[in-house]
Length: 300
Image 1 (cartoon, rainbow, N blue to C red):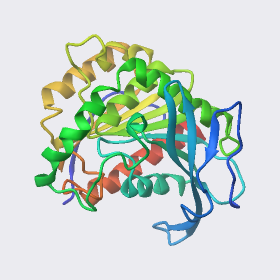
Image 2: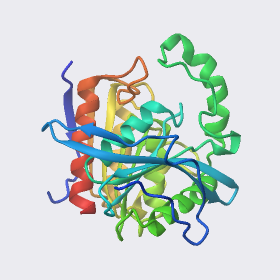
Image 3: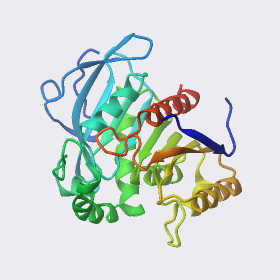
């Protein structure tokens, strides 16, 4: 299925094996980087091969220790940093593969377990393929953990993740990119508003809600965003109706944010997640093209 795309908004101008190095105590443990996650090669569409190195790290936060996946080109060089914020199903092989794809384009990618307060990933038992019949039972476990991720908690956690990126020898100096999926898209927008001096580009895919009647609604603080923003909504997503999208775009316009909004018509909520029934290959590929172009414009 080739998605029809509706867009609006302001448009901006167009290793070697690495051991984790403790930096001011931000990385407190390397979880078997050599054996638990092997080096790999990712084949790009131009048929070239990019060797990657992935490892597990533990990051000290205000409330404990967050386990995370880090992946970067295995070329001995530092690269711009990217923070990936998970969807509700959490840190798992499908998201690691997504992080690998971004890293293969020349980035050092950090993918934390947002639910670390409840254990190391995988926090809940997930099937290899998530179909609609399984979602109600899974969300009974997931929703309470999502609710815990208040703006105050997010600020503390993301502050630790951004510090890790800033202090890592794997990451070049400067602002980082942030991308989020489902609930992570909302958290990514909040991150850009909370840390405008640290975030240079931000994207969200099949996310929301962005406009609510609560004091922590993202639309209330978008005026703090200095990064370029890209949002790609799913056309078949009751979480983000055309009315909701228009409301958020209006808030972005009023705040003067550099942004572009697109709707992938025919795509469903979760279209980027290859281990779910919502996955749509063409929409997912478009997501990679737009995301990497956004990062290249702003982080290099």
